[in-house]
Amino acid sequence: MKRSTSPNWKEKYEEKVHTAKSALQCVKPGQRVFIGSGAGEPQALVEALSKQQGLTDTEIVHILTLGIAPYAEERFGGRFRHNAYFIGPNVRDAVAEGRADYTPIFLSEIPALFRERKVIIDVALIAVSPPDKHGYCSYGVSTDIVKSAAESARMVIAEVNNKMPRVLGDCFIHVSDIDYLVPSSRPILEAPQGEPDELSGKIGRHIANLIEDGATLQLGIGKIPDAFLYYLKDLGLKNLGIHTEMFSDGVIPLIEKGIINNSEKTLHCGKIIASFVMGSRRLYDFIDNNPMVEFHPTEYTNDPFIIAQNKKMISINAAIEVDLTGQVCSDSLGDLFYSGIGGQVDFVRGSARSPGGKPILALPSTARNGTVSRIVPHLKEGAGVVTSRGDVHYIVTEYGAAYLHGKSIRARAMALIEIAHPKFRPWLLAEAKARNLIYSDQIEIPIQTTPYPEELERTIGLKDESRVFLRPLKLTDESLVRDMFYKLSAESVHYRFFQMIKTMPHKKLQELLRVDYEQDMVFVVLNDKTENAEMIAIAHYRNDSRTNRAEAAFLVRDDWQGKGIGIQLLESLIEVARRSGIAGFTASVLADNHSMLRVFHKCGYPIQSRLDAGVYELNMGFTKETDIA
Image (cartoon, rainbow, N blue to C red):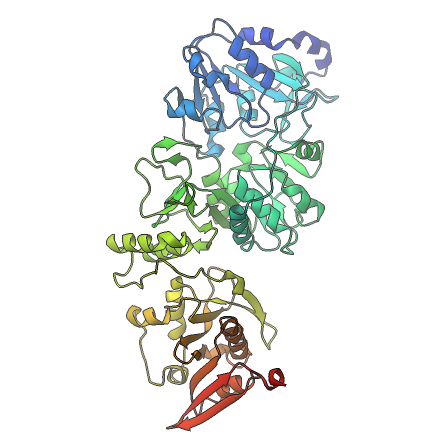
């Protein structure tokens, strides 16, 4: 490894300056050539390499690059063979057609291949900023695996670009360690963001709802992370931080608003930690000589043990498909290699071990214009598992978030079916039954069903100033309802069911979980919004089409009674029922259930009551006296 830092570097600087063509004369047949990453591709050197005469059997290695890749063209098949550690669009066809290779590997582990000389780099082609007064050039927009490649290579050729930002951190190479310097003024390659489309926007909003104040974020590549950042600015969150392999323009507005300030990070407090960026010139100007931003190589940024030192570490990455057991494919379309492992598993494992961390994998529910489900009974033949069943935590689509970690296969299948596209849910349910993943008598899902009304979710305040989470019931709430039942007193069970029930097996729970969100509505209250929340109350109505009145019933766990939950549940049910055109509620309440009788009489609507055999039959119309006046 070269480590000379001569104070007289300026004296030899001019001797190292060459044209791209002359510098590349050092590349010999049969050698392995590394090319710098992402927006930091050394464009002039790549162009000159493809024109270099006399080269044969030259292996090219790199991760994703934004620029041209002539070495992957069919006409150069006898001269170059590309080996991708991550497949980008510019080499995808070559890999698919067998003209290039793909090496699946965690991004954090690529540098060790170079440093331990398991993969020998003969020549490294890199792009850097001009040297500072001490002779140090910054790797600029891409440090990632470039640093380890340059420090391990037998020969280093650097395209010194005066438009390359000087980024701070562990991301410098001294002029003394560069063999050839090729001056350049080319614009840095850009990957501008656009406005999020409706689909990615819905996914982004669901992800944003999982974030807490003081969280540290990792952001993958693509529309979904961009959309997440776009919607994050309106949620009122504060003191967010960044520890990621890459980021793009979307962080800048959040920094300007003070939402991202890195003030609560437990590692590198006050700093954005990354290894590369891809975005617009605005982003490149933002990171230029900015003390808030530090770039480090991927063996550091992507080390799960380093990542886990950030409390509330949130990783957000994309997936191609997920099977009903929680296996995640992210690098292939069946047996067609599409991208790569990248840093997904590094950050999934790091954030999983972070106190309060959340690994999130996101994908649209369908592909091919809605004709194919991305949530599937089993992965396609040949598909690779990037994130395993044991590593998976959150899966997010435009239909919501499913938490899978530590859940049974049955619970996973039901949770994933619930966030699949509605038109594929009956098929997925049938497939799950056929494979014995779920109960054979599980409630059938109608092909035409009302979407889950997520707009009705909200946090409510109670009399004791505590805050709880109110939302519509989900089909996956079976275990929550069951657990709540077994925490009820005998008196509460009697008040709700009018008889003593000692058990609540699956068959009984089925009817409680049947809801269509139109003629039926069920609200539940959870003690918080986390995946470990407990159900503390449930209320439902079921409309009678003959009378257009719905029968309502309530149940609040004993240790949460007297805090105002009942009246808020009733008001929520009334709001939805009125909007659905229902004329009123009926209810049967035991005469000695004074608390429930008070809830109904406090609602503000006129109630007619009739006592029969110790049971009050209540009839409430949704027209107040003030409405008539």
